[in-house]
Length: 533
Image 1 (cartoon, one colour):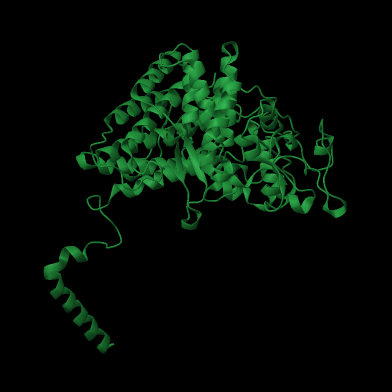
Image 2 (cartoon, one colour; image 1 turned 135 degrees about the horizontal axis):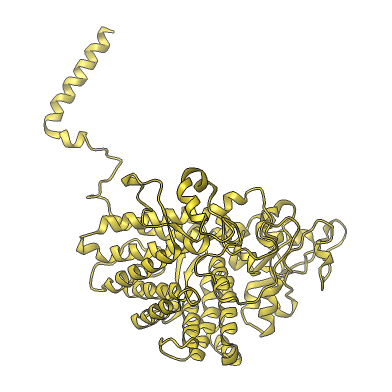
């Protein structure tokens, strides 16, 4: 004990001696950065990845919206029963977990962007990053509002200040605030000022492209309001077009994922799960749409596996991508042997394989391997979407420059060419894309239907299922026949929102109850968000 006390006394003495000159260093945690020393550029890639990942893979839309709007289909039986949430609107064991992920992960993205905004305020060298922080908040928070309705906004992202029970703002007020903030932030971007240094988009900090992204996002948000607030929709769509939106597929906003570094393409991750390889197919609605006009994307996105169960349970091996061979799986069927067994569906093409190697779904089309790459891009917003939105805006009489027919053609060509971002397996020559668009021009009398069906197919084929669903809610196209499977949670209707995370009811009770009290029918899957008229 005496020796220990002597040693302790010596240590204390040594510390007292050394502290006379280095007190500041000893009182600073070397593992933490201060606001003065932390580089806010480091937050940008996290905000970008979390935002796009919130609507990828098992974080929501592939398990919900992909099949709600009949881009995909699944027999959702056995090991893949978690797709019952999507294909049949039936609760699975993890539905309550899945439904909260878009909320939780996008609020995480918004938090990164909000912190980035705070750290760049009043710093001229970081002015562009400050504007981008606001744009990223608009991207993340609008996605949450589109999915759930009213959300915490004015008091959100302020836990550091002690506000952990934020009130819910109306989606109308959120949207109008986001449009105003987007306008200011995007206009402030300046190519002569320092660029962001940690950009996960393909822009690599290019401020001119970020400016186009800001205005393109403004256009998308404005067009959400065509039925809820036509005047605001027109005003901001025209402002966006005048400001300068995307002008080519080179402007497409997407995150370049990298599975080796933990930034995985969650759609690719899901579709390489063995049960998904077997049971996740393109829907009959989509395949029929593509086949009706000989869409050149069909042979790039769809394949019929080789015959037999074993061949259908692997992504490897020989498959048939010939357009004529493709057959879409009708939504709402299973492999359970009853009245809704796939073999009972109208036009059932028959099984493939024999004996123990037979499979009832062997002739149905599945996604090709371009979608199974865990380092594939995750799309945020594309030139194709922008041109199709401009086509609709022009159809509605908005002053956005150009004709509806030209914007539509640009959108069709761009949607085909953006598929090449997945790699050589998705590349379609520009001449082929242009020839297809020329052969399938916009018909004025059918314009809104054509435009929004093309938007649905394009966003669906780029695996942006959340966007395909939201635009379907807004536009009503394509006209879909709902599934009415036994035990469904939506009364046989296609869901129009996701219920709030269960934790909101228990942890933020008063504010949650106030928000749900404004929903017609309460916190259900078929209540409509503000702009969904």
